Length: 90
Image (cartoon, rainbow, N blue to C red):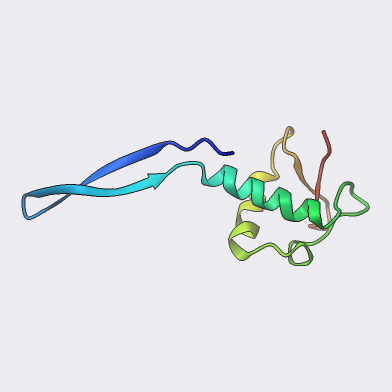
């Protein structure tokens, strides 16, 4: 479903090297998928049916990503002038 890149970090504490933690890349894709899923379930397919993030049931974290994900010409998530969002069909 998503392509993840795994980065391994080595932590150093008192000259003892041990395996650190793994950081998963692809957070933007996960958020995009989650937002698209919730907006699609809300029935937002045009400017007339656009809804606010609260009405779509988006979390605070997802709302923070909306500005980033709805900004491009090729973006599937679109924003109206009155700050409502909809999914642009391809």
